[in-house]
Length: 388
Image (cartoon, rainbow, N blue to C red; front, side):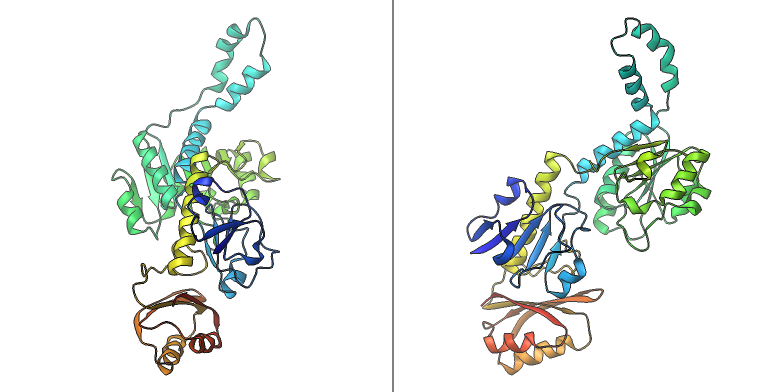
């Protein structure tokens, strides 16, 4: 029986997939897998038998990725499962920043119940006049699952869409509408676009990428939308850009002490994936990732180990080895198996930065002696006997 611990309320569409040999438990001490949404794991002492953590969502800042990797714990997320929910909120953001809907709603609340509200309305509504987005230029920075959805939807609404992503995947490229102009220099977006929306992961290279240097290239009155990560935007530079009129509106799904107090900011409390459908999709994807890894050793959508897929094991044995990405690791692994008289039927080795993963199909079950020797290799974090 495989114990799975849910640290947050996970949609039943996901947990319903954990039947048969799976059991949901409240205590993680005997758990092989963890399903989590927002619970912080940075102070958690993980049990020795924990094999994987699946985050039902895209962000993994609540999980200590390096610590997990060094303990041989694979961490998964669910990119794209919430893409439609985020896309729809980005579209709402475009409308909220082009038309002063918020100002109009506030005016109606201020004058609620007044007998002459209809007359006042006709005189006051010009203060809330805005622009249509049709024909305006939208720059989409990052063409992953969400960025592609946003770009395609905006193009369908009649916007002139520019997309930038130097690392766009083949799948994303196929999904992108032909009417979206794929450009190779992000500065083109800064210089030409009326609206700019950011959909990149938070990395050292993207942290505070929307800053004074970027603002200096932008049109006066540009609108910035951030439904990706708070730290992609330099808050102090944004405050100055709003004050000077360089930025007309900044809409963010990540309000903090600074941005929530700025004039010209429309903030929402991280609502991007807060739909029933998104939560259901994320739960299903997370459960499937967990099952495929525990049962077959396959890795898909991990954030600390490389992707690897050898399907369902059809031979006598399969072992998964999580280790440091260092020279001669494969040589040591194959030498140990050969010394124990175990023949390798198939093997995949993948690396990701400091970490690597080796998955082997064996013609004979893995012997305990071989497993013991493999575990003693310098840089070996974990050896999993998946079958045999």
